[in-house]
Image (tube, rainbow, N blue to C red; front, side, top):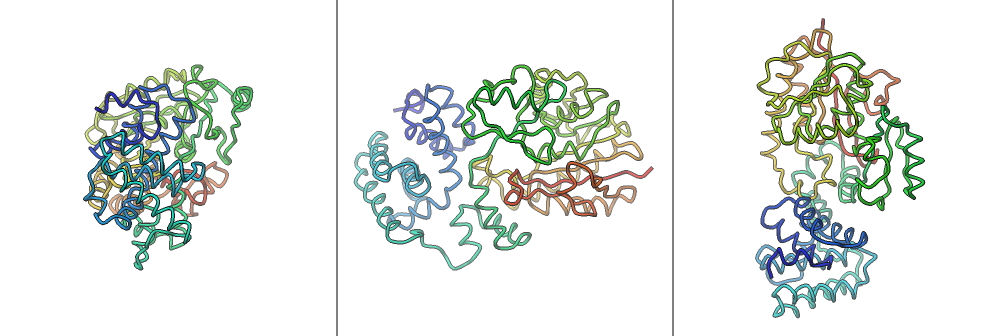
Length: 454
């Protein structure tokens, strides 16, 4: 049976298996699952189970493979890829999904093997699943864990050792474990109210009358968090009218740090798909000019669509690589460089990112960040400001980049937010800003504001 035929299937486990097969062949997990769900008429509950199984198996891949290594005579990476995917789907359910009865998880995993040309191995699948169930009933942790503390955390929470080490060096043992646990949770969805089109109270009332229990997120003035059961975003009240857009509250903090004023010229150097660009325009009351620059013209179209839906007129787009733009020399009052990064602060949103990034890719990103910072600094007028932000928790991309820049640029200095700023609580007194997910329950971010001397 080909992948295409399977897409019309309404069995969540079969759909999850098909998506995992695509991921094994190199597809991004979110792309694989979106493609599948577009072609099905699943109810909301089954859609959520399918999504949970795919993202869960990708996130927990290291742990699930370690269990296969432990319970089977052949290691996970030596198993036929389809068999490995079937076992991952089964083990994920019995280990992590308390709402699914163990017997149902075992039986449906055996069925999944049979449906996908693995009938001859269905006895093996059944035996391995039951062996895990027996172990988990006999002891609190069935997984055999190594003595090495970094490997132990990495295996238990399913992260590469190098990421665990980066966090341990910064945050210590307890905080790193808490961070690993947080990054394995399903992501929340936050909205940012567009004050030009609607008030906070108006959006809250519309959501409540639709039976959606939103909650505010202090200290942010325009942020609401959706409950997990909110359903399709485009169908929520106020979407078509441009009352709000989806943006995590950590990302909202960044534009508050930029603090743009009406009438100014502001440049967002890596803008697409435009979450922060549109926020800057809203904070300026849509008066002035916000340039959204990105080398991807197709992704800039998304920025323009968002701006149109939010009824914003002050945004102009520039489809060029920010590294080579020369026409903005000393024209901007404020610049935002939301730099490309390894995304170690948003691993819960991107299930496969922890397996795609490497220490070498971080080194390359740090070089790019350094080059972008030097280039975008030339766009700022004397006395103007530049905000550097990333959604990573890696000092090589954060503190190291800023320290190197300041060492080379005598006319620049850290410029902390004022004590009454929305973002003040996330900053040290000398101007280093960081959001730690396990403490603040939002995406991990790093941000600093820099000022050019007059």
